[in-house]
Image 1 (tube, rainbow, N blue to C red):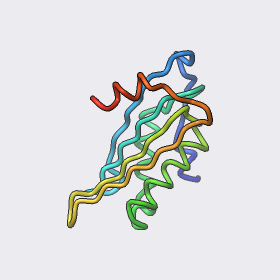
Image 2: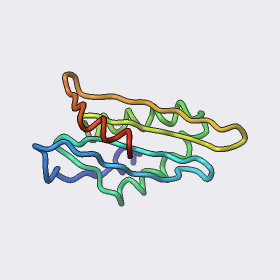
Image 3: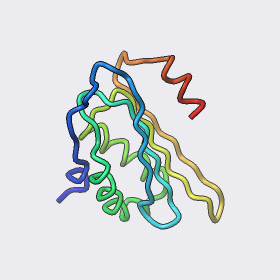
Image 4: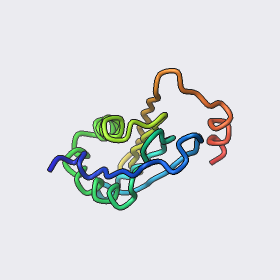
Length: 119
C-alpha cells in the first residue's frame, strides 16, 4: 500500500464555502507536521491522516524540506484542495521550520487569509 492510500477522504459538506481545516501530528518523535487547507470537493478523514503520519517515517529522514514537499504533493494528488500549506518543524538540535504552500489557479480569498494570520 502506498502512503497516499492512507489519506482517506469524504465529500466536503460545505463545498460552496471557503473554510480552513487544520490537522497536526508527529510523523517521527521530535518532528511536528501542521497541515492547513481550504477544501474543494473533498475533506481529509482525521483517522486516515493519523495513519498517514505513521507511513511518513521514512520520508522524514530526508530532511524537513523533503518531508514538507512530499506531504504537499500527496495532498495535491489525493485531496486537490483550493489552498494548502504544510509546515514541518523540529526544535532541536537547531530550531528549523519549513513552510510550503500551493493553491488552485485563480483561487484567492483575501478575507480568509487575513483571519488566518490571527489563528
